Amino acid sequence: MGDPVLHSVAAPVDEVTDDIRTLVADMFETMDTAPGVGLAAPQVGVGLRIYTYSYQDDEGQPWRGVLINPELWMSPPEPGSPDPDDESEGCLSFPGERFPLRRADAVLVTGTDLEGAPVEIRVDGWRARIMQHEFDHLNGILYIDRLSDSDWKTTQKIARKRGWGKPGHSWMPGVDDLDA
Ligand code: ZN
Image 1 (cartoon, rainbow, N blue to C red):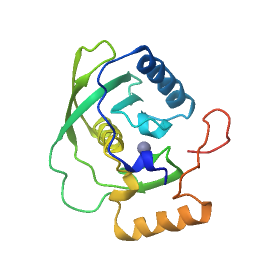
Image 2 (tube, rainbow, N blue to C red):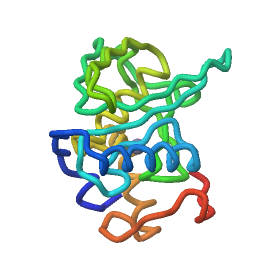
Image 3 (tube, protein in one colour):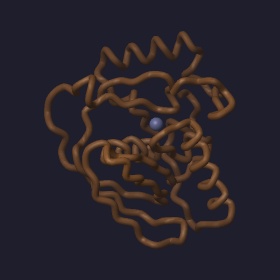
């Protein structure tokens, strides 16, 4: 949090080159090591419209993939306050914290995969939350930007205390002992 690449709109991918394939392989490795359920390219310092995701549902069914140049549509979020137990999320770019956030229950995401083939994903529940969170990253939005005023103030206090909120901070999954 604080690095400009995390707070800027990412650029579309023109062509899937070997560099992009290497980046995506690295993102899968970083996401799995973190561990995280999703990772957007801006989180590893690359301002491109790419994110990976990986999630196992209650039945242990794996669900993972990569989206290049995604577009997202969502159902209107239910009015009301989020439930801290069921609707809290975290972010590898604001590690070690979780805050409640109301999200749309269902999304449709389109884009392409690494081979340039069209991808269409219709999901709800936690998968829909992951899609919204990662898609936000491509538009320079962190989930903390969407919190209630009081939670947002709390995040700013945390950031000040830890010296975040300015460029130059990073952590290396698998190397730095950071409980994200
Ligand atoms: Zn995040």
